[in-house]
Length: 135
Length: 278
Picture (spheres, rainbow over the protein chains, first blue to last red):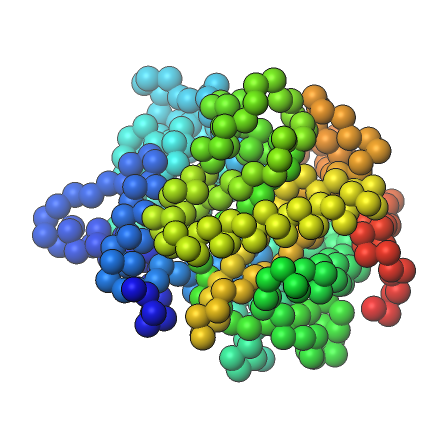
């Protein structure tokens, strides 16, 4: 099926689809387990004869910014901590990073995710890099 | 030659259709780059990665074109093919550590692979397992199952690269074990060349992409010592530092001890003598 060697980044597709839906007056949100969204985008691309792919430089840049062992350790520490330190009801700041609840917009089960919203602020304490904000 | 990205520990340049990856002497701890470089680290890791690519050439094609780079980068830079990358982190784990340990404790599985009860931090797994994650440009990487990988890139490619990931890990771990080093796990990257060929990319089996532990002090049930970065980690753990940037400067004795350890890892794994002029 995908013999034409065309590629597209599934995350880019998700962003563009969200913008399209927003233009139609629809609010979208990515669930805490964003795998459904990623897999759906990849399958749509494959179904259209396009290979899911990432720009080589973007992928290398990502690897160069985050040595894998450090990231794996940090994420493990963070995951263990979030279980114990999820902000209690009524608290307005994350128990892990101190950011306002909701800052990280429904991604990856971060404690800040108690309220959905969008942000372009990186969270250095968790290695979190925010997505481009959806208008 | 155009600088297109300066990363925490490496930089990438474009030279026509090629990419040049330049490893710096910068060192990171807890994902924070420290202000003091480890002299020679970039060269040592580049040479180690090139050695591994050579050892693994019969397992899978790689992106290395050669070491024809400007003189000022000699020894610490690699000329590579520019690829379209697959949106998956290809991870093999032979021991329980890091995020694998955390998920095992929470679920008893890693990336959907069930593991026996009673394993401890640092335990050797019954056999190496494939534990892919997402490769997100935003947000955290998340464990995904092999079936998720199949959905994303197709069954044939997923199965082929899973098998290659495990084969590269097994081959590397076996070679290292003969030299008294445990490679606990490793992360690989794969892409496609313009002709559609699948290619192993980035770096391979370095201490930035793999956990190296000394075999003679391996003991399940505690945090294992990182073979090369442990001096920096131990020293940083004694500081009143919240592990956020900016990191503290590294004392000279720690710099030298760490540099010596990087050389030791290179020499033990490759069986070659490290030359300063390399």
